[in-house]
Length: 195
Image (tube, rainbow, N blue to C red; front, side, top):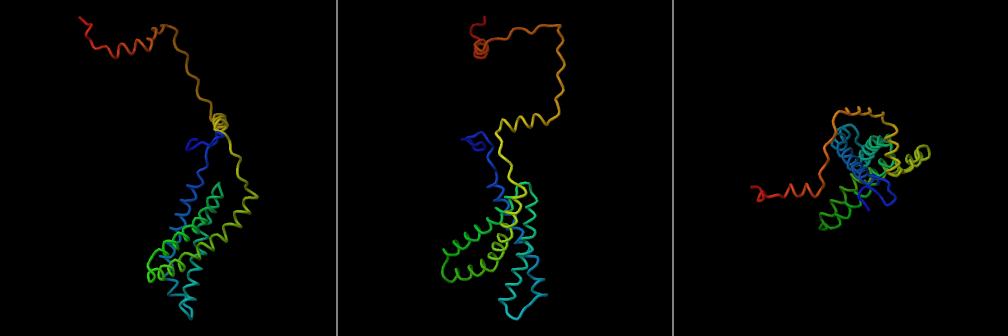
């Protein structure tokens, strides 16, 4: 087994790596949106209770972030966007596990922060990504995997024909090549036999 080729001589899909980086991209998108929109939303949209205000702000930011993150569905492999949002749910669970390991007073504060900033993007992102992916999967099925030999043949057939080399001039013959043993003898000759 190779790192890049499976037992059927097909290239392994880098979807896990692409999904990981899509998750990081989604985390960055939501982080930037929270940084940029939290203050303007607080100034312009305030409700009667602080909890309702925070919930509405979080929902607005989650919707905008999901819309931006859904642009990954424009990629050729539609699974990248889906795995990015699934990765958000995995990161959310990891944060809850990490918060569980804290002391009781710190745990309560951390769980509130994680819930406030993490649940809405993970839920809304997955609620949007799964139906979109399933709909796109019907119209854009995954391509059949090809073996390396088939990929090389396809690549060779699509490239322009390489220019043919010019024939060598028939003027001189090449001198006979030395055998590997003669090369080794010349390489390791220490010069003691020389006069």
